[in-house]
Amino acid sequence: MDVAGHAEQAARLVNATVLDVDDLVAVLSERPALAARVTDRDCMLVRRLQRDLDPVFRAAAEGRDAAAVEALDALLAAHPVTPRLTPDPHAPSGLRLAVGGRSDAVAEQLLAESLVGLATLVADLGAARLGVCGEPRCSQVWVDTSSNRSRRYCSGRCASRVHVAAHRARRRTPA
Image 1 (cartoon, rainbow, N blue to C red):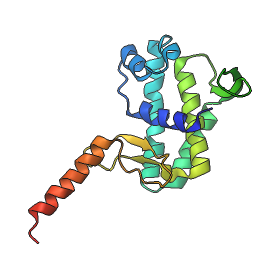
Image 2 (image 1 turned 90 degrees about the vertical axis):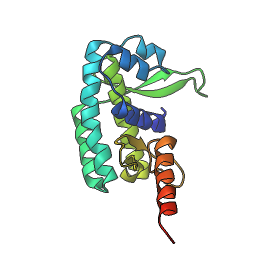
Image 3 (image 1 turned 135 degrees about the vertical axis):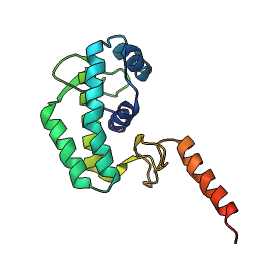
């Protein structure tokens, strides 16, 4: 199971605009087997997932780790996850541990993976590894899997904006 990948998937889902099936298919472009099964109901469930996961990231970004953990625990209790062994030709044993939800729905699969990824990451590395972009005009969330806990922005683009603005401000200020 790709714990970091599932946690990052949670951030991508929270950040995504999912108005219709085409939007969710685009989000799942790297997972064609899931993308091929997307329904209107999945889009509705993913929008609910976005609303449910967003407070976890916001609480963590504000340093309210206990609130982030409590919100994540509540989601885990509300959405039971089922682990199972599935074939994986790339694994040494030929198997990998996967998680799923109550049904075979795409949204249930995404929810289960996201919750397990976030819960494992928070348990192993702490809620401080979740956050909201530091660029004032951006509200995207992120997962920090760096070794030095240095992530502060959702993307290189936002990081550049902040750094360029700071540089320009320093140049405008007389010494």
